Length: 92
Image 1 (cartoon, rainbow, N blue to C red):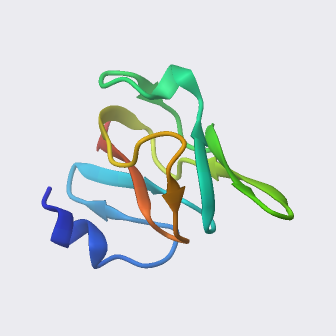
Image 2: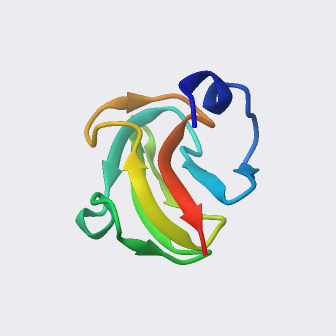
């Protein structure tokens, strides 16, 4: 999946055939759960995979799909913007 394809999506749900991405719910600093930052990890729909830390608190990053982690798209600890793809999944 090319970066330009990922950048064209907006909102919570993102899917292209067998691929899907988990997105940041808001802008801030990304903190991913260590269990999900390796390719091959299984993520279930509704599972909290991390948090985005803001000045006024934090919001959870929730997967809308069940899948296998193909690639982490943003380094943990980096700043993200709202709706930015952070994890690329292969749906199962």
